[in-house]
Image (tube, rainbow, N blue to C red; front, side):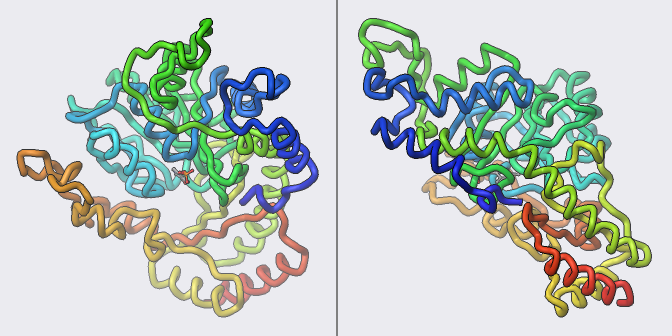
Length: 400
Ligand SMILES: *Cc1c(COP(=O)(O)O)cnc(C)c1O
């Protein structure tokens, strides 16, 4: 799962190159930096790797979502459909631009259910944000078709699925844009950091300007101080050290995924012993980034029994209805509409009217599915002893 497992000489060399110039800022200092532009190089390499063409580096995956939504013009008065099973960052970004998150059900892919998405589209829907959760693809082609018919742009939250693809087409390149996170537990990491990819040069320019206070980045005699501004922005810049680590990590991404696939395959084989087990539906097993292994049982009781034996034998698996950061009924601050803002924004409008109330039982299909599902994070490095211990625990769980 996390790229920090394989930090090595490559990352060190990249970082030292930056420190040797003394320039940590991605712009300016043209003489001092001696041609070294790490963030720019990382963007170019990431855009080429995914096949998107354009890439905008930012300070986090959450910032990537916000910058992308801003560039697409999403704001107050809009609704954005995402899934109820995601990391909180997805809805934080939607609320942060002033729009309202609407949650869809998930299906056997553990990602957005296209049929439920259709039900939730209305004339306020300004964007659809499917999330490629736990390393594997949503039914993205179907989702795009529905979105196209409705004339609504799609932003793929690809934070958990860098390196994933469907028939060779990289996740994040199906929609109008795709966002990535390089936080410390993601497949490839820069500690903190994010990226937005797109094939649309205009959108790319908007993102580049918004993420840097509105700087138009036009070459002019006055340098950075002389740059113009078209609209109000903010600061979500990535710094050179992160760009440097990103270059080294991206070069290792394919080998990370390959190692994870091997470990995942091994555990999947032994899990097959559990009666009634069903593995998560994969759109393209070849394109699975294999950062997680998800499996479901017939009912919640069986999941609890299996989960207990696995835990007692040192091979605990995650159940997302118990883990509080990935399924919305557990987000008490969202349900309560808690905010620091005096007016209550974004849950309450400045006139005192509540804008949205979330019902914790609004997604029964997702709740049932997640209550029957267990998940193993897959590491890049799993020792033979560790794998054998897990296999032993799984054999015992098969009798639970
Ligand atoms: C990690 C994550 C994010 C946010 O990324 P950060 O870099 O931690 O801000 C967004 N969406 C999903 C699905 C994530 O897993």
